[in-house]
Length: 129
Image (cartoon, rainbow, N blue to C red; front, side, top):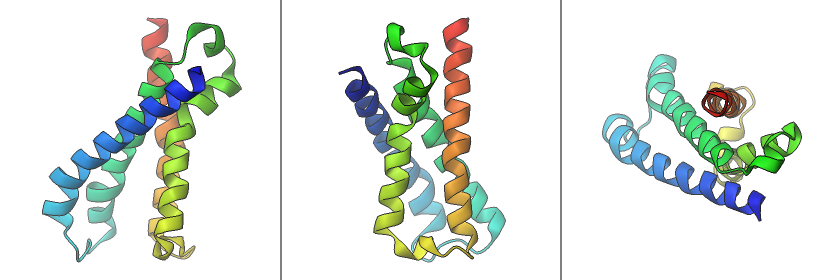
């Protein structure tokens, strides 16, 4: 039950932050035509995605109960399940992102481990203090 709660919290935070990102950043600044440069894509798409993944991982890690928190593999799986599932869903729904020669695939894939790592480190910093 603890894993289900962590995944549910991670999904809720990911959906809420994704909605905020879409309504405040993506739709008004990027629009349907996309971005024109790598720097714009990084600033307007990938860094906000990183924030969403960090917050979802951190929230899921925070609700994971004490007896299992000290088991690193289970804690990692509980905290990172929602962002990883979202990445798989994104790649399956948007086959254009699957171009291995494109920067979008690699940036999107790099955001996942970076965001999960920062979210887990943030959880560890808050948990130990």
